[in-house]
Image (cartoon, rainbow, N blue to C red):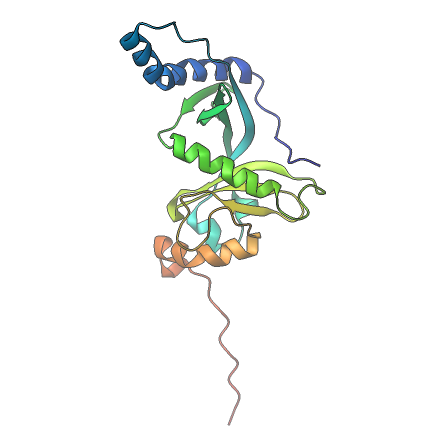
Length: 209
């Protein structure tokens, strides 16, 4: 089974249309300049579409120390890859409003390079053994205070694939179980939160001499 995208918000189409209007003039600026300079034919209309819908989840360093990314992560919206003439140009995000409304923004992070590395991580996910036979939902995980942005394949088991640039403790486009990624991120999480909140091992038993 292909990796599933989650359902989007009810007003997804109209909100994303506004995001397209925001980003495409910027992306087309070099093309327009070239047309003005040469006096050639006007540029052809750009066909755009949003794809690769991902449910956005956020977690914190203290969730890493609690050993509970999958249960502590909070839903924060939906993220997409915006294609213009089949070229990835941006990653708009729809955030849930307090009254159920939604607002689309195109974050500073959604540069051409970051969009490309998201696609690289997704391609790596599709090639993982067992994924095509399993049932996985595509999610986008951010743990900002430890520097991690990753694709999260929600299924049995959960799989995490860091997106480049990844923190030094993990490798981009490599699959990690929750246990593995917790182990890798724990030293950074301790540095962020402080040793008072670090997990403590049980001291060895002392026997009488």
